Length: 269
Ligand code: SF4
Ligand code: SF4
Image 1 (cartoon, rainbow, N blue to C red):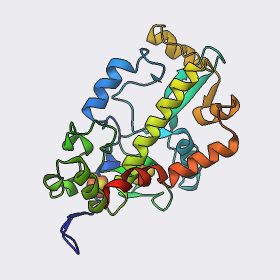
Image 2: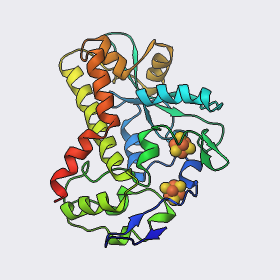
Image 3: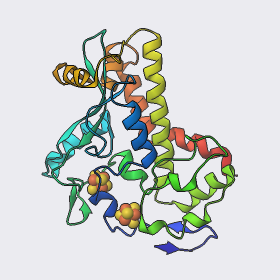
Image 4: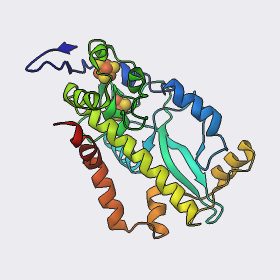
């Protein structure tokens, strides 16, 4: 829906068609799917545990814990299972980075009568960032394919042609055009992806973890499935990389989109 009100910048407004929540299986962007197929099945420290076609959107470990609680409140079986893991040869544990909902249909298990039954909660980043796939900061400035920022959403058709090409103007425009907060959530989710990647590299560099990457995928998968599992952020506390208080502070910082707000600030004047 296109609502040109109080500003020259068009404003995005979700028309609650439910399409994005009805088909969450295999909807990952083409370039992400290609990356996963090429690298995520045993060639990198983080291993994808299900085929790209079976996966639904990723939930960070702390989000999966919340969804596990909310599924009881909402009386649904969200079938939350590990999606990506590191097989750590030092601890012998499978460190779970993200989860996914392996529902019986393509629709999100929380979608009831075309409405999200946990809409009143914080939900997950992937719920709150749509119609974005990602924000513009994770790509190199000057090389941004505007279309790749967005998923398929009928309410986008009047916004997309208006998105400026110049990076600074694009950031300002996106911040104004998405008063629902989806842009800021997309930027923050990218910050979290970068944080997780940096933390993994740092753990390897400090020899805190030793990821298994030289095994055939089927063997690796079996080993991960048979190993004791620990959530990534819990593991960081267990090995003293973060204190429990620091972990809580970090998640609270993520929840508040603090990093994203700081990141876009220079572009808003
Ligand atoms: S974000 Fe787009 S696809 Fe999703 S419910 Fe709103 S209008 Fe529909
Ligand atoms: S939790 Fe709600 S917003 Fe998120 S995908 Fe499911 S139905 Fe959609």
